[in-house]
Length: 254
Image (tube, rainbow, N blue to C red; front, side, top):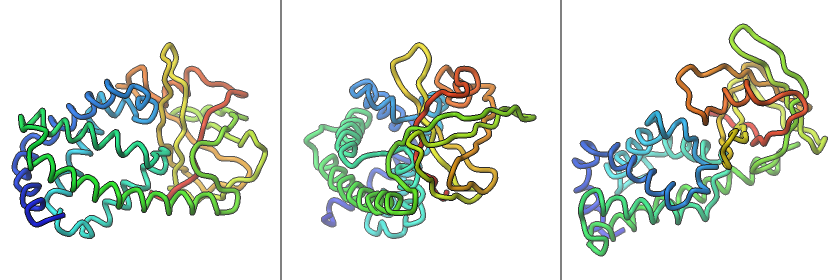
């Protein structure tokens, strides 16, 4: 990035502090309307609650504030890329995100898309996307090469259900019959379910309460009181039974 690009991006910091969430809400609505297949990737509960737009607004602001030295954000980048890998975010999806983010900045700030400001943000986004894609590739490769490991989604079967005081414990085994990576307590997996009455799937992360062996995983699922029809936890509790299949990503450390 040129010094002029950096100054232009930093000039938007006050606006991002004031209106960042409005911008990211607009962005998500725009992107999901233009690319409805991405509703299978993004948790719609987190969209409706505002959790995801708030998280993205904070990340965009932090990036703009430290645009000349993104290495300052190493801890945040580690967190973001781990979450992305747990949801099987792919490199080619960054182009879709970038296009919609740039158009959103242009439309929300009422700045011509051909302006120098949007050109500066394009360079900033390309820089960030390159960092994230490379970190995520290394994480995917690491998951695939560990014993029993895999990258992306893997089909599992629910082999047992047990009522608990707060919900249900689900026992999951890989349908291919192969071993799994052992996991520590506090590591997590993503689980993807089919949403009833909708032609979309929804992912959510579940943290292991105890260490897991290399033959099966167990997660406890608790109902969500203020959930929407897209709530993965409630769909699991109400619609899934022993013998049903779902998709799972490999364990990661939060």
